Image 1: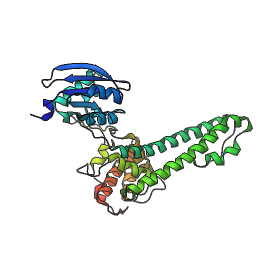
Image 2: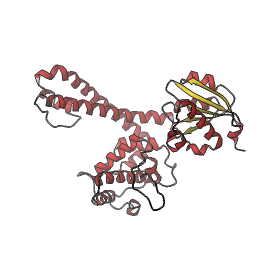
Image 3: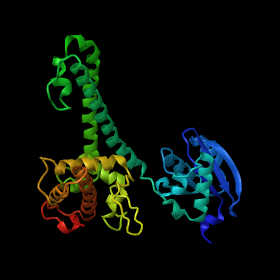
Image 4: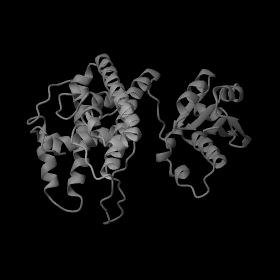
Length: 350
């Protein structure tokens, strides 16, 4: 008999303030239904009980909750709801029913839940630096767009410049009537620029702790931000049996819905980390753009875009991003020198 079946199985649907809990006995009967506060104290109070198999969904609270549960001696399974249609697509979805479904699936066969493993707390903290920088860049872009739009509505236009220099290059061109309104925004833009530079220096320090970052940066268009995020997000370079699985893991593989002779072309799955996926697509945009370095990957992408059809350029960009994920993982595993125009062209054509 499998060990977890001998234990009580507890499904815990984690919520922002309260979490629904369903306890199943070893015979599969419901022993208890309740709610616990989604705090460390609340979780500790309820789960200070004999060892059990606890099933939770991955989410904002799953990291710290799983750490609490492990510290109390429980066996923990972290479920991926995207892979369990019974949960994500239920027509009677509620916290109560989700908790019971988690418990029953965990009791019968945990592999049905596509168990996930959280990255280390250190890696999560380092990844937070990259995401914080991205949030700052997004905030700067929104403020710059607002300033330009307001000035345009007065019949004036600001000179073209980079986002980094905007707060210095355009401040003197602001109409007198708008200085009191836009002046504070320029001060904020100056502070954001300072913080972005500081976060970039932090990323450089993180990169020095991970020597493989430099291996990934061999690919033109892949900078420190993308390389660090790639390594921290995947965590373990040996997690895949084949590098081809990296593209699918990051949601860059097209969906499949084949039946008989019907095999429609569908959009990508968008599974995995959206931040890293967006960075890879941005890298692909550079590779295919006017400043992209000549490479087998660029040539393949341009040929694909040249076939024409609906959204051909966009589809080629996503396809290049997928192959870029495969290439980066391969370089990470082997540590070999990357030859842009001669690196295993047959792999890129796969």
